[in-house]
Amino acid sequence: MTKRALITGVTGQDGMYLSRLLLSKGYEVYGLVRGQNNPKIPVINEWAPEVKILTGDLLDQSSLLRALNSSKPDEVYNLGAISFVAYSWENAQLTSQVTGLGVLNILEAIRLYAGDDIGKVRFYQASSSEMFGRVQEVPQKETTLLWPRSPYGVAKVFGHYMTINYRESYGMHASSGVLFNHESPLRGPEFVTRKISVAVARIALGLQDQLSLGNLDAKRDWGFAGDYVEAMWRMLQQDEADDYVISTGETYSVRQYLDIAFNHVGIADWEKHVFQDPQFFRPAEVDLLIGDSTKARETLGWKPAVSFEELVTMMVDADMAREKSAQGK
Ligand code: F7E
Image (cartoon, rainbow, N blue to C red; front, side, top):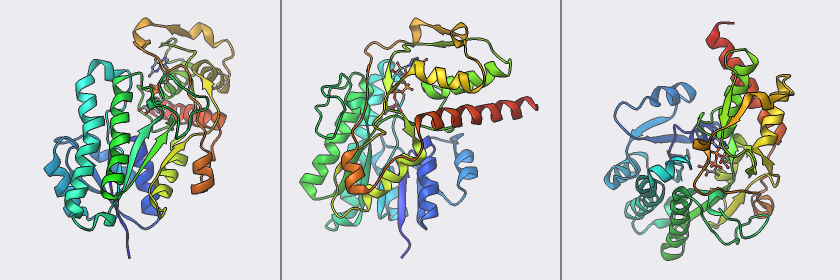
């Protein structure tokens, strides 16, 4: 029988990779999209035309119930969120509502929709390594104490524990994937990896000269988004729902990312192009993230395929190609 999946946040990087993965496995895929005349609808239509678009909003529970009734999903992937950490200080309340309360809204909608047959819908919550914040253990694993450092991180902690609570209270098959940073050529240009890959391509092509950044010493465990959506799917194929850290187990600084990206286009003395601007420093920084994904590797049989260097060069190559085609070169 054809399985059906409903993805919130389908127009984001992970939603796009996940929708293609599920389609390749024969799923009927529904994507929840918010807002009137959302400009991202044509993007997802072109990327994966088979995805059926439903309109709704994580803040509007009746729209979630309607989406569940029309898609009748076996699996729900909650990827919808306000996900830019820096923005979350400026819009702390909105971030808390969408990224935090939104999780409760979809969990509760599933509970109402499923009624006595709670097991008929499996749920994935996109939790985040930002929950570890001021890390209490290195590397971070499922049992590490959470200490979020941003309104975004706090909201994700709420969603994580609410997911666990619905599993424990109602026996819902609800899993929380604690994903470390994952990037790709589809990443939004506000995130540091893509901001750098766009700028490096433009500097190499002589279209710009400078790049302004914040803290170059922050260290992240960066993986490839295409590898990470596979882990989401594997979590929902387990007999028992559970929580898993998904990470590469390696950490690199923003500076190291810059080094590989600029060297890839033949620029060794990149320091002359990069400036630090106070506006890109955060009120509270997460200095170091590195994950221990032993549980996912052992239980889900998951491991990342793309290395850090492959990820950086993939992103720079994609932006070089985009810039060249935009310039008609
Ligand atoms: O920052 C530093 C910044 O914005 C990475 C989201 O997907 O991953 C992401 O959150 C680091 C930080 O990602 C700039 O201070 C320096 O230390 O790319 P980012 P993030 O905050 O780690 C987690 C797992 C999520 O869940 C989030 O949704 O880079 N940094 N200079 C900068 N960051 C940005 N954005 N811009 C700069 O100019």
